[in-house]
Image (cartoon, rainbow, N blue to C red):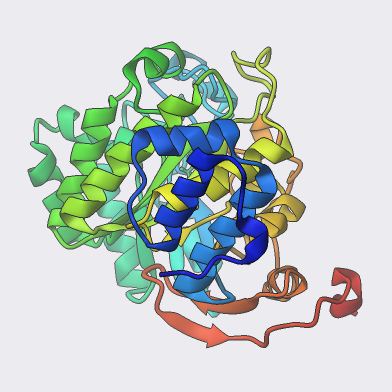
Length: 385
Ligand code: V47
Ligand code: SF4
C-alpha cells in the first residue's frame, strides 16, 4: 500500500477508484489506462507517478556512460517519420562505415570510463550477419569489458531472414559472438492500423515481440520503446504498453521502457504537429502507472531536450540515459533541440541534482557503479562553476 497524500483525493469517482488501485499496487486495466490519458489532470498524474517512482527507487536517478556507433543510415525501409535514412539507390548521400572505421570509434574511447556501446543504424542490404558477427567479435577482442547493446528488432529481423535463420538461431549466433543486450528501437507503435501508415514495410509488432522474447530466453536483456505523438490514439498507446506488459510477465527480460517523442523535421510527416510538453509529461506519468512490471522508465534526453528530460524526473522517470558522447544523429536530423547531443558527467550530475534527485552511475544492467551526492536545488550554472 502506498499512502496517498490528501491533495490527491479527487471528486472524479472513476479517477479516485484508479487512484486507490495504484495505492494498493493493483494492476490497471487497458480502459483505466486510457481513462488516465483522457481525464486525469496533469498534476494528479505527476504526483501519482512520482509516488510509484519513489516507492521503487526513492530519489535514485540513473545515468550511464556510453557511446553510439551508427554503422550506416542507408536503409531498405522507408518509415514515414524517419529523417535519418537514405535509400540504397541514394547511398552516396548517406554513410556506410567499414568494420575498421567502427573499431577506430571504439578505440577512440580507450582509457575513457565508458561501460557500453550502443550500435544501431539503418538496414543496409549488404551489411549481413557475417559482417556484424565480425564487428562484435573484434570489439570484444579489443575491449572485453565493454557491454555491447546493439541492433533493433528491425535490423535483426532483416539479418536473420536474409541468412535464412530462425529468430532463435540468429539470436544465438549473435549472442555467442558477444552481443549482450538489445536496444528498444523499432517498436514504434504495434497497432497494425497505425503501423501500416507510418512504418508499413518493416517487421510488425508480433515480430518485434518475438525477437525480444528470443533474446530474453537466452538470458539477454532488452529495452522497449513507443513512438508517440503522431497519428496514434491514447488507446493505441495503451494497447502497445499492454503487449509489452504481457511479455514482461512472461520473461522479465525488459530493463527499461523509453517513450520516444515524434519529431517532425525533414521527414514525410512534417505536416503532423509535435506533441506539447504537457502531452510529453502525461506520457511518462501514464507509462509509469501502467507498466507495473517495468522497473525503469527512461527519458532519452537527446530526443526530449535536457530541460524537459529534467522535468520528467518529477513524472515517473528514474533514468536519463547516457553521457560522454551520445553521438546519435537520429534526433538531431529529426529536429530535436539537441543538435550536438553530448553531456559530460558533471553536467548530467548537475541536471539530476537540480531536480532534487540522487545521481547514480549504472552499467547497462543497472548495477550501481558510483553514487554521487544528492544535490541542493541550486541553479545549474552555479553548480558548474
Ligand atoms: O526506432 C526515428 C525513433 C528509434 C524519429 O534502448 C524517431 O536504450 C522520433 O530506439 N522522431 C531508435 N523518434 C532509437 C532508439 C533508442 C534511443 C535511445 C536509447 C535506446 C535504448 C533506444 O528512434 C526508432 C524510432 O522509434 N525515431 N525517427 C523521429 N523523427
Ligand atoms: Fe530505416 Fe529505422 Fe529509419 Fe525505418 S526508422 S527508415 S527502419 S532507419
